[in-house]
Length: 461
Ligand SMILES: O=c1ccn([C@@H]2O[C@H](COP(=O)(O)OP(=O)(O)O[C@H]3O[C@H](CO)[C@@H](O)[C@H](O)[C@H]3O)[C@@H](O)[C@H]2O)c(=O)[nH]1
Image (cartoon, rainbow, N blue to C red; front, side, top):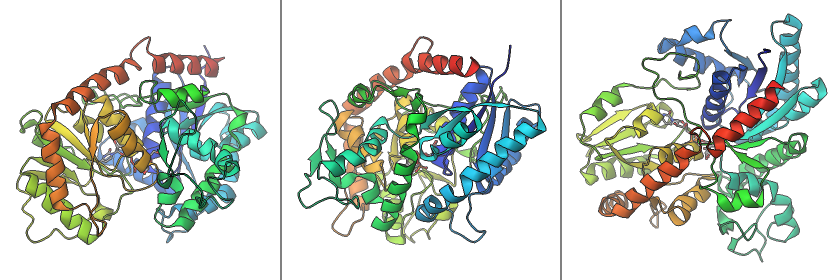
């Protein structure tokens, strides 16, 4: 039987590469070959992490997963976390680079690409595919609600909620419903209004609207979600097909197949936290991690460090190298373990972990829910504000942390919410129920499982 070759194209950010990689690994498990395209900068980070972890055998030519790269158009000294700059240069450089990559692959004659799976935020790749006669799909690594909000931005302009420059109008309501089946949204939480500065937010939104214009080129709108988590949104937009939760298999210690390896990390995972977790009592540890973008200033970093001390509970704290501030003098940290990047999915499945102090990135939410770990929600930017509302108000699987008048989450607030959390048995039991519901989706016969099968059948035809 023919082995189909799929080209997978994530948006260049950790929270996008991870779910695309997990999805690609599922394709490999199901007999497809995948050519995974990172931008050059991320490609070299991913490869060097794999080399550190002695996983590079999977880069073998014979492997079913081939990692390749294209330029992102930024210069060597440009800030690669600058989303505005990135969104301006991607459409100018990457479509042409992708087209050339595909043509070169075809010229070599080793592989013929049969299908493109592009991140929703790279949906322009569907146009490249159309030009070359290759079918495609989009994969949304964020919530179906974010997907729907993006699709409905023009409607919000028509309804007078947004002006033609995508800012809230003076008459805009504080809370809206995109459809009667969907939960209410706080208009001030719209993701582009919460990206640091408004100019950046608008550039990102314009880029995403440009991507959304290509969506009609495919019937496959895949999303890392499940029916139970977003029933109203999926009812309103049935074209969005849940394939979540996208989780890496955890049995990788003994099974080093392509389908189970850690193949998309930008930073090396510090495995020492796993033996530290083994020494902690079950259900005792606070896991604090804020994804790949969050940056705390020195004051906020101090409050967090001293707040963790104040809780007087064991904690595992991920402090990325690019977000490391000076630890305050009073910080003791004797109950904690600090790592610069954790094997997060493994951590969340460890019985010692009681609670996930998170920035509410959608992957972190899906990974926490899939392990029955409830949340303390501390959103940083973009879609994370909606995600927090969803977790706390709709699913009731977490508590939100509030900022004080100076805009900080204080050490006292952290201590108070941690205590409230440990006093509330209901949050834990709701999370356990949610875990079962969410995980049923990827068990044989489950809804996401069946959607993936249907999709693979389409690729193989
Ligand atoms: O120590 C760590 C910390 C994180 N992770 C992984 O990194 C990913 C982080 O993704 P996510 O939780 O979604 O956070 P961000 O990196 O912030 O993701 C971006 O992309 C998401 C999906 O579009 C959005 O929801 C976020 O707002 C956006 O910031 C997850 O798979 C984690 O398992 C690790 O492996 N180790």
